[in-house]
Image (cartoon, rainbow, N blue to C red; front, side, top):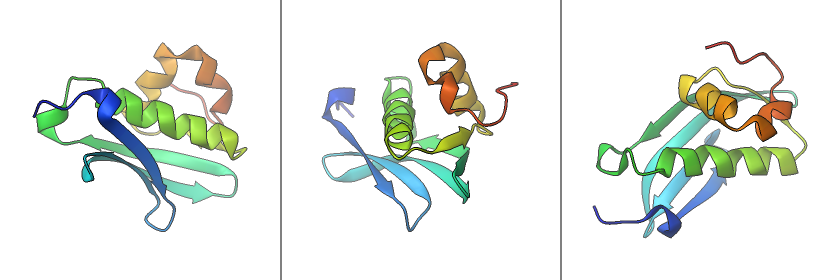
Length: 102
């Protein structure tokens, strides 16, 4: 699919305990979490295979972390993709409640 990462938008589905990334109204990925108090355990990231390798996963996680920061929450990155993202973006390390160890 010829979509560009700049065409994507990330939204919070608080009832579904996830962030979703969409292109042209179609959900192409998600980031599931479990909330425990003020900590979101980010435990699963998924991108449609047709959109992999083009930055959509990074946009999903980056936008989700920006929203989490704005809401005054912290994270536990139990998803290996999220943990790797935080290691590559040390400016987001202050959001981590538990160490990033993977």
